[in-house]
Length: 132
Image (cartoon, rainbow, N blue to C red):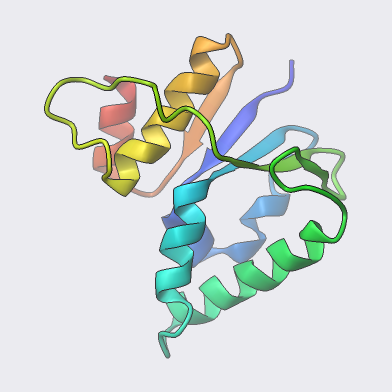
């Protein structure tokens, strides 16, 4: 059964080519991840360089079609930018505009649609919140 892998920003800041690491599954980038990458792109650091590399990869993939509908990856998978799931509710007290919580809304929305979904993040607290 194919799965959805939702990538957090920190994964792409560590390894832009992570997009290509999930075989024939669906790789989901929540829109907020693009916003976060955009903030890093001008930094003269490894994070800045990796944000720029991720942007170049996404720009090449954009030429294959509509990223919001999904574009094919060389591995047979699909990359999709996810714009939906704003209406998903998280536990009380979790700020809806916080980037991590917006990513968690995407995970919950996909899971609620009965789609096997895995959050890929280096953020331990985000993993804990995801399990909640």
